[in-house]
Image (cartoon, rainbow, N blue to C red; front, top):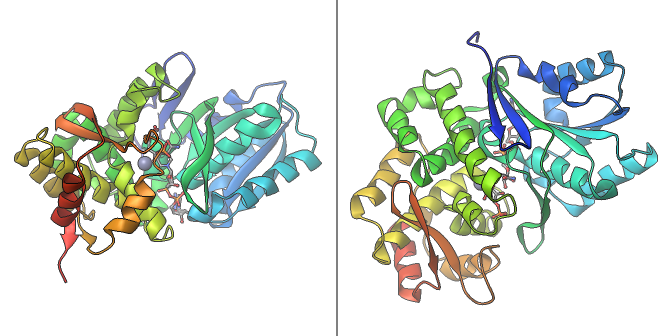
Length: 361
Ligand SMILES: NC(=O)c1ccc[n+]([C@@H]2O[C@H](COP(=O)([O-])OP(=O)(O)OC[C@H]3O[C@@H](n4cnc5c(N)ncnc54)[C@H](O)[C@@H]3O)[C@@H](O)[C@H]2O)c1
Ligand SMILES: O=C(O)C(=O)C[C@@H](O)[C@H](O)[C@H](O)COP(=O)(O)O
Ligand SMILES: [Zn+2]
């Protein structure tokens, strides 16, 4: 796919997200001397996509080590992080060396966390290769791994030196992963940018094709929403919580299912649940709840969930990072673009929202 010039989206004054075609070539601009050696982190499945990045770094005279990590959520474990720390230690990486992540959100979360913790923080550059990582995971400096007890329970805030979103790499991304990434794009639409919803509604099949007409604008709009929020509240003291829309229930779904469901799909279900919760708490109108189902459904994203699992899901939701003590806290909407907090929702609302999305046998 050929196209227009790259777009540069600043995240405050901290770093830029570059979106365009062939932009991963810019990796060396972000790793100027005194960087001497670089650890490129990627799963074996993406060795071909990482190869041009590795070549570029070597051509610039850097010593490049490649670390293979498990594909998908299996990358986000303490054991895998420890393996990367061991590599960094063996190669005597210093504070002037760097990590480069090439992959989806699981890789950028893991590599970002390892960079954040190695010597208490070294530089990391993200080269996201999924739609989801471009519009969300690689941007904003939230890094993390899972523990047996839950999702992203260990992590840190560590901003990258830069993010390079090369739209050409989306050509090989499986359709189901592209669609899963659109869930986070739709999230940005519901919490902050109604134009995103209009673009999807006008051309859902184009939105769900990597080279579809609305894709670039959708990517850039979602990144701008995220950049705007994290530039104001990197460490999630309040505002940043809005980016967690749909994640309280979504993360519970992922955990209960042993991470066999894609994050984006779980977030789509979680947003539908949050919309139903917003309705029950008297904050959100029925037509906006219906719009969740129509927009997500038009992209092929799930908006229902098997019944009979409420207690398990509630236990998982209590470990959500927005909880305070025994107080459950959700992001819900008052309208499109108007997220608010719902603290300590009635048990009847929690169960009623679940019944509303539950699949009937
Ligand atoms: N830190 C954050 O702010 C943040 C935000 C959103 C999501 N996340 C995290 O991101 C993760 C989900 O990321 P994801 O959806 O990118 O999943 P993923 O990293 O598991 O990638 C999905 C699949 O796509 C494959 N793939 C990646 N790029 C490809 C390409 N160009 N061509 C062919 N195959 C390709 C991968 O090998 C993998 O099998 C979750 O762990 C989630 O918690 C983090
Ligand atoms: O960047 C954020 O902040 C988000 O909440 C974005 C989410 O899409 C992302 O999945 C994030 O990793 C969830 O964070 P967590 O704090 O609930 O683990
Ligand atoms: Zn997410």
